[in-house]
Image (cartoon, rainbow, N blue to C red; front, side, top):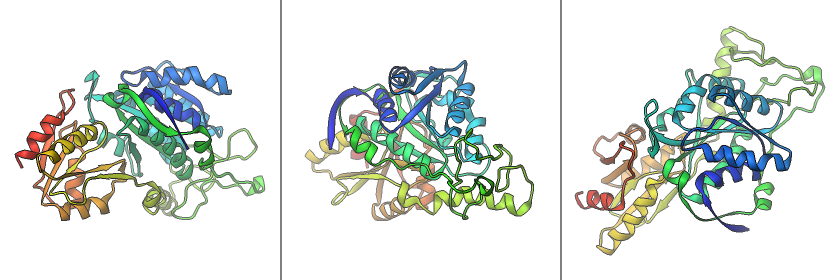
Length: 376
């Protein structure tokens, strides 16, 4: 069951959050992500939720984490500089295993960069948004409809794996306006993956006493299930510890709870790959230009296919390896100077890819892709 809506990518992400059961938004306005906060402020009070514009980005994620600790689905949204400011508390959410969705509408950087221009410069930041050892889950929307569906998926993944989940948009896709075909609210709610809660005796509750590849079970605060909440390495009840074995188990579990279940996380699109002679790897709004270029090249008798990861982290290693083994000619194009290219090179073991990279705030046009392909 689907519905049609004319909207922008940012607005669709906010609508998706509410449809997916989000009841709290905490954030701070930052171009080009501000519209997400605007829409959340409009929609959440009508369903009994709350949206708060805080005094800065740090406070924005702090209150979002607090809402998640109370058992609510919670969202914050920003752009690259805001992620940098939120970094310390993102780390707190990783180690304490707080489910949280973080939308990053990417713009040019570093620092203040190009606030009103498009970029994909936060790809490596999304993989490692804070210090330490952990595994990030990062989704990337490449169409207006995916601004909605990937946000819905992010909430389900956050509750399933008890971790922050990133949704990457970019300025082009966030501000693009058009028709999107998206699931109905009823369909979304039917497929919600709820967070697990402990329902045994309160004295037996140990939120971090898990199998070595399972997430913590954090009951809502203020309901009588007592545990310690800390950014330090901790034991089964959350109390700080420097015990060698407990610290080792904790960090390895943060890896395994993601690595052992990549099949639940990974998504990608393959477009006209079957009989292609040349492969293009792209993601986000760039993939829209690639599809246009592929269709035009087909008319010239040049067969080109697209591989587009929707899940950037963990990367779709197996499929990237299979495709880069199959295709001699591979073009990697992205709005940065090779942030995902490095991952593709690592997985494939190759260093001979053709590249079309841009970090000046301007999009990559289909004609640029066509010219590059014909030069291959």
